[in-house]
Length: 618
Image 1 (cartoon, rainbow, N blue to C red):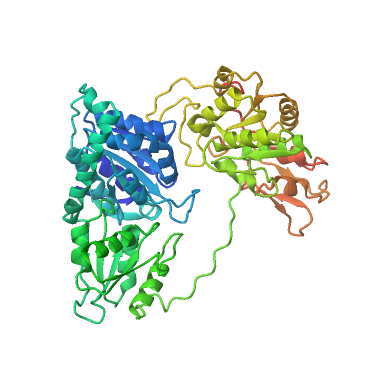
Image 2: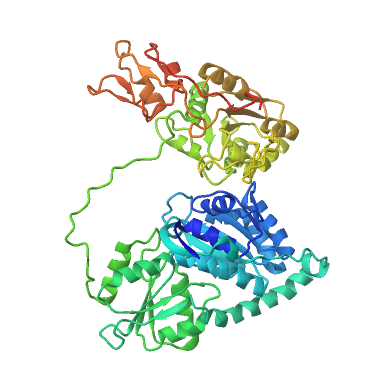
């Protein structure tokens, strides 16, 4: 054993390695991404690791490994679980032979997601057991236990971390590589009565699942990470009050109590709910405050337990308005709720500290020199006053919605913009319909929508924003980059060839930083009937470093503001007099877009980044 200062995701990764994981698959998504990346980085050499093209594929790859008796881990964020839910729902009926952990990182807030969905609720819906860690150190230990429970009961299990666990840090004791458990997979044993899902098998296994989960209620009541923590002075003023909590909220609760007294129930396995332990906790209490995020899972479970066993205990929480019904909890929220619940102010160790200044508001924008800005601007300039809808997608390019570009009219989920553009076009044939999608998202969920558009004779323009990486989540490789997370150099999957194989006749590739050519291409392609595509290919400036910087000749600048008002590039600001443009050389990447936009040629000096190796046609 040795001690390391680890991010939560790093701790989870090392815990999985210590548990003898044989295969890890997943799709990048904040806040889960670093788990798979850490396993790839710290791989002892006997673990297969892949970034799958989407969460559904990752789930199926992990399931196949678990069928052989291997220990498998699949990683994703909460919205990715929606994509993976089809195989997961059936997999729970089939079961697994090796331990299989489905790591889903929820994002209360949300901080970087479309939804605040709660995987604990999904666990109840899918009948899949859920593990819910409360700290970085507990996450490290708990994921090892999750593999054991999965293997013992023949079921996939959820490991539900949240942003504050994933991205929190703690110095913890971890195993040395020679202490890792070594799991030897037996191999796949043919047995169609077990592995082929038919209605008869589903009926039989459904009954077994219900019995198993009923048994797990008792098993989890004995699980050491579910615990009752007695108040510091049982029998005191607040001994008839209890607090039930989970995850990072347990830490908030402990820190917030400060001189106040309440019995605590820490729930580490919200499903199946540890009923017997809950009854012990409720004994002798008058009321309980449930502090949790996001859904009132514990609150509902305790209300059910009270009704089932005839316990006269008032359960309070989100459903009673004592805890906010949505959003991320915090120390301040927990403290205020506990103060209201106990009627006693807590001790504040920071009350003598000065109030910190308010943080500046920094709305998210496309990076200086981002090729997506040039792509959006070219399309906007080409379409002019025509009636047009711009359907966006999930990724860096969602930021195209910000002023002054204003080029994202819709955004739903990954790949959905392609389908939405079709729906609008079928109802409003006089509207020019554009669908923007990134290169990684095209492979993840854009191909099916494109096939649907071609098959059903839609009239739309698909715009693939190809920056040769998965930029939003940390520059992971994808099928179009020519390399894998394990460092293998492989043949790139050509987006152009995929589109032409679908049947598209008009597929053009252009560098968006060549503004005039881009505008001309958009005008010409958009005028074509049916489904057509433009691939704007220019590498992400975070992975391909700039070679020059633009600067403004103040003598030539007329102060028209076109470079600022049209582009919204964060590297272009007003000078100290507030009259003329000035370029922040620390931010500028020399993309030259502003040079091409300036009507008087007052900006120069930039050097465009080279396009990816192989040129525009890959």
